[in-house]
Length: 296
Image 1: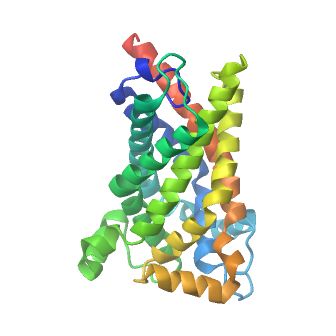
Image 2: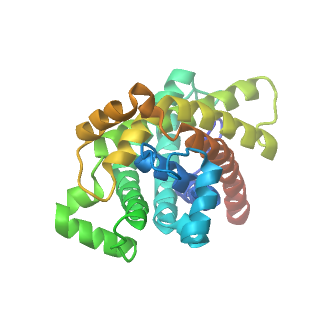
Image 3: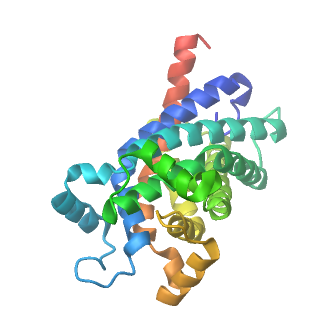
């Protein structure tokens, strides 16, 4: 279990299942904010009337009005599948790596060790799940506003593979996605784990719903502010048309300067604060449920 002190009683399969459940719940609950954030990162530089706003609620309302409520969930199924796989893999990788280095007597690990464990888990999850699912999700959101030529996720994969090859279709933006995942997973899991270790040493009940949610929200805030530039470049590099990472980086600087690298921060922050709370709370509760049903 993320947070230390429980890894010995949490099997790898249980970490995998609980992480997958948490990822699916978190993705389904917060997707409209992810949709708005991606739209801003792709088109936030568009100065035409009605396009320049970066208010997530305004974007959500406008899309619901102009394109229908279902449009807000374009690419959501891909993200849910990706989030189930991503969080299953990264919770498993993190718990496994952390268990190998934590103090076996106290079940705790220093902040540096927790963050490094999270970074290693980020590389694994990016390679196996995150880059392909993020690429398809972004391409579908981009396509919904432009050409509308993809009938769904499977058709998107088939079309892009035919046009750009398997690597271009699924692993475009791998470097920036992996850098983002290294930072995101390192800061998110590392900071959450460190906070729980600190609270545990002071006798705070770290298993309560309120504490789990608050810790996850804090971890989400730290993660967003630290990794937003990677997310912005990654999103632009994964749009439906073929474009290189460095080309995207130069374009962002030319359009908005350095501050453009934090395009979509408000939307992502709104989502990740909520998502962090939901993710870790769902993971903790899923572990309790699985242990109850398996008699552990």
